[in-house]
Image (cartoon, rainbow, N blue to C red; front, side):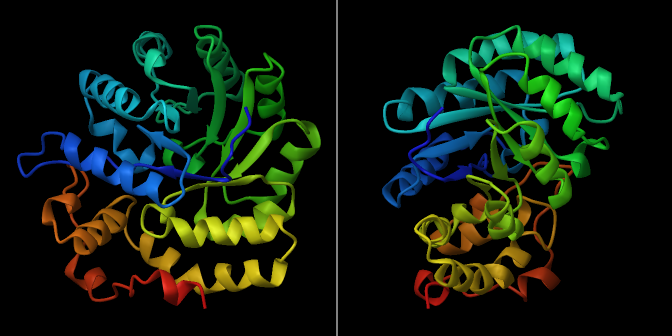
Length: 294
């Protein structure tokens, strides 16, 4: 896998006022991302509210996005769940609409490390697509330990990357030590520069839904050797990043998109998520590309 971009945006799933899927807004948003420099996206990830989409809806979203954008963008489809057999069935349905598959550890079950390994092994052996491991213990209740990442990565050379959202830089360094060929992506917009400094290759980002140019500039300046300039972007962005996660993602980012587009329905989220609180709305940051590029 050779990404031409180091910034990958996780795309929200937008809903009409009756909470049916708003496919036109998804198309418009992805087109905007593409026009502003993003070349790789994730759909059906955490930001996409995948757990509240039915299987039929998830397949429809994947098919719709792939049919409209597969010739222009690299499309990564997220796959998450805690029933391995059902996930294999879902994988077979969505893989025709994915260039790569991003798989997270099971949630709620709290499997052992061997259980996590066997889960990934079963899924990886069920597809010929390249795989990204997604470690997000805060959502799943269990961590993928570095030794387990190594075992998974050794299953096949199709395991090409990991999105690390543990927030644990020491763990990420261990992963780099054990899996030198595995591409490390920050799964946390607030840790982009630290992750790059220990061998990361980029970020799978929420913030780039709003400020793709700024996130791209920050990462590209780092790889050009302009560390001081990258740090300016990083620290200018910190208050904005903080707001993006002031409540559960994707609630704040969808609210900001609704403000930017003057389309209130873009803020719609499905239960058990609810819209951004009035208290948080008062803290809404200024959205200006120029402000963050000073």
